[in-house]
Length: 348
Image (cartoon, rainbow, N blue to C red; front, side):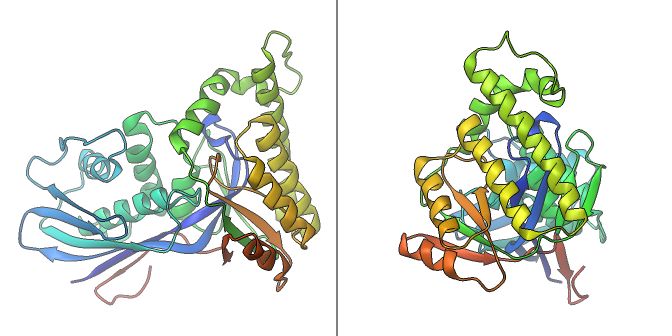
């Protein structure tokens, strides 16, 4: 019996740095994926090879649920523990391998795609033949964020599990709306600049969490806040507004040029208000738009990693410009969420 489970990376269209405040986001799964493929084994161990990272992990099934963590980002072990606490049991060991084509540590959510695929694999290996994708998303979120009291939100896990383009109410993960796919094409660009996801999230999240209500209440006074926190609240207020406008535009399949303008306006708030872009990324975005892109923004927590440009269908000008700048690119389509195939039964 063979089992293959895969999950996509994602781009955050609108609502960057708002999911951990319980505010809504618009995200889209992309057609770059992580795959976990495996077979049952005789030994009572879940053995996982990660050749792209040069690692191999082994999770003994005896006394599962109390496996020790190697560090505060030992998400793969956390998935085994969280699923065991949820009542999942494995009748045999498994040998599995991870492969993927999502750029690592770039803001395209490779780690959450792996976490979603791994949680899905563990559920299917434990006899849950048709797990609800929303359940897998919740388990991935618990094991990647809540288990370690990490600073991230739930957008990445739900986008990877559910797929397509979604509006997600991060104060109520049952509040999900499927949206029409945005028109045009997305060009994902790797800045080549390393990013510190946890550091950026911590720096931006800590001062904002006590002020989430002030983001929602546009009339709340900000006179008592220092300059940095006032600027961050104002930026988040505008990003929240832009997310609502974009939701209506996508619902109505509105003009792609307007969508591009909204993306650029959102990036300005992230760059100038929250300080999560870099001068180089700002410059590359401007160069891409001079070459014909309709808009764009940083992707993920920021401080480096990837950004994306919204392009007209078939327009290769922005891509050629990024290549002239020496940057790697991927032309993206919106992709499906969590998928699995068990012993030739077909893809679910």
